[in-house]
Amino acid sequence: MRVSRRRFVVVLVVLTFVLAAGAAVAAFDDWGLEQQTQLENKSQPLFGVGQPLTASSKASLSKEQALAKPAGLVTLAKGLEASVVAAGAEDNVGSNADQMVL
Image (cartoon, rainbow, N blue to C red):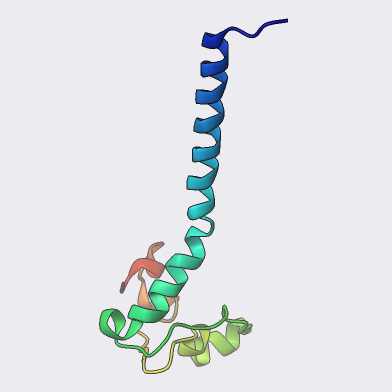
């Protein structure tokens, strides 16, 4: 059984394309890790902090604790400070309180 020259060329081109696409995907293996690395390297000039937090906050406060000390609800990177602008229903900030100061 003879394979035609044209079929051979088509198979070769397709195979080359598949291999090139695979190599391109392998070159961009972890976009998220790249972003994290850039954030760590540029956190001082961009945000004024030495480095970002290493983990998410694990703080768990009751309603009473949160109302008594609202700043305890956030975890900040070293060098940052937080102040509370509204802490309770009497402040009447509405449903977008989480977007108040960004």
